Length: 329
Image (tube, rainbow, N blue to C red):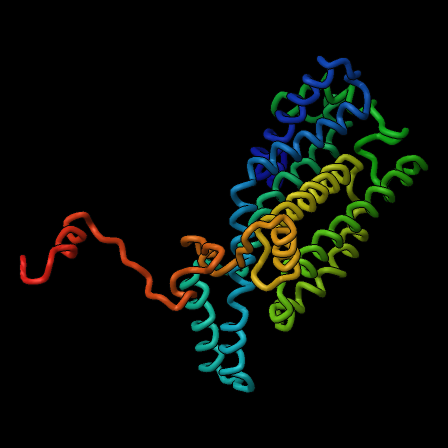
């Protein structure tokens, strides 16, 4: 086992254990242990388990994205303040003010990357696991976790639409494998594009789209699918199934979150308000307080928004003393 495999070992063990668990469940339900569909569904089950475990990080990602969107006006003020100043002191001051703003609001640009970063070790571990299935089946490599040599033999013989799960576009001459690989690469690229497009077009206010960060995201909207399409020819079919399923989960999860908790000033928020009006319910605007974790506003807004002063909480003793007539202490 090389250095990279040693680093990936915990994730490799986790992947193989979860997949074997689903394989055992599916065969108990009547599916063949040598069927490619059994192992493909086991990979889907692995995705479901991982995404459920990563749900707290996804919630943090959504909150971080919304905070970053709401900070755009202040970030643009900082950028305008130092526009044209290229000296070292100005660049340092701009960086310090920017990070001070992030710290004040409890966010940073990297928070939204946490879920995908956390998934990458599992992704590479699955890649290595599928690539070593023939060696494990032949007894050349020791199996990891509960993934035994007998299971490796069955998985190595399994196919879906006539294509082995460890087949790749570049390294296999099987026509069925090439066709299925192309279909999965297209599906992976399209779902990536739709997920990013949904986030930018539905859940970002117009003001937030006119800044350098938004322009970078817009560029990634078109670049990422191309990167996946180019690199996907090296991925085993099982990995492509994993990544496409992950994209579908992200797309559905994001749709639900955007519909229920849209970003302030975004088209999604306007659509939500229209749905509430159609149902005769009070319309609540999504405000900073909700994003920062403070008390959510009522249908008429917070006390500060109504023009009144926020009432401070008082203890019973202070409330009793405040209700006494003047002159009596």
